[in-house]
Image 1: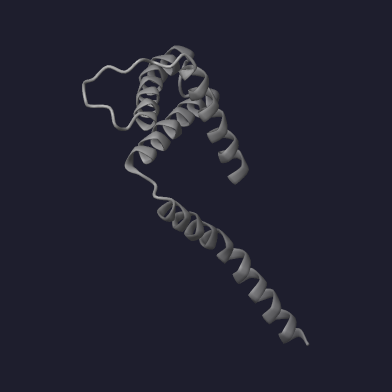
Image 2: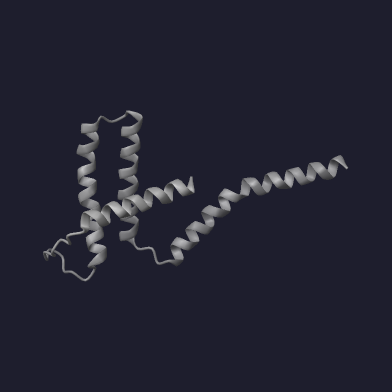
Length: 121
């Protein structure tokens, strides 16, 4: 009887340990199947860097001034990447009008990424 219980506990432990690996594999498969482009990967990288900067400021590694100085170029890069994703057929060097709601869309994208990362944690 004790051997059966031991085997069941061992199997349960293996299942619990395997779950994170299976989730990561499933997530990567979904990303590949969804046609994730290089631009989307760049956007995610910029937003994750913005989140890392915020965490560094919250922990105290960065002062508010350093945070602001480092965040500004990231915001510009995010806006540029989002604009390119909205208008992929624009010729390089051709000026495109900036939408009035661009700031709000960037903030919405940042908020959704933060909520998504909190849900995954």
